[in-house]
Length: 115
Image (cartoon, rainbow, N blue to C red; front, side, top):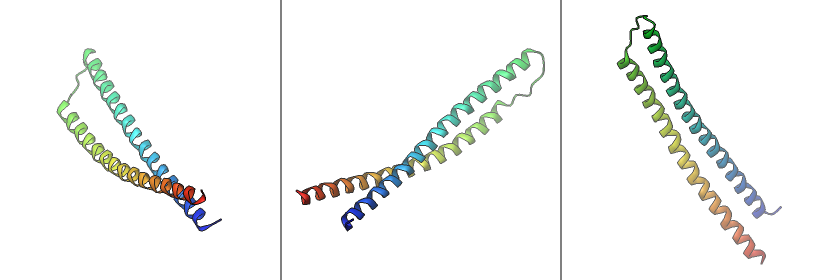
């Protein structure tokens, strides 16, 4: 194996590492989407349960303002986390593009040298 071959293998390894990181971040962002969907479903079911309890004559102390403050705080925290992950993914994907371009240039150079 020549030094050029070794360099190419190292470059391919780096590309694969970045692809894995990108995939992991994509997966994490998808999990946040699911989390927000589940949280919305929970809120819907919670208010339906409260309505049912009230309809059956049981007094319920509803504090919609408190609930909204909790949800707003929760969303803000998630948004911060999502933004951090999205920024990191952007950086990872940019680096991956650079590595892919480098790999392609290397392959073209190698092909020209062989021809």
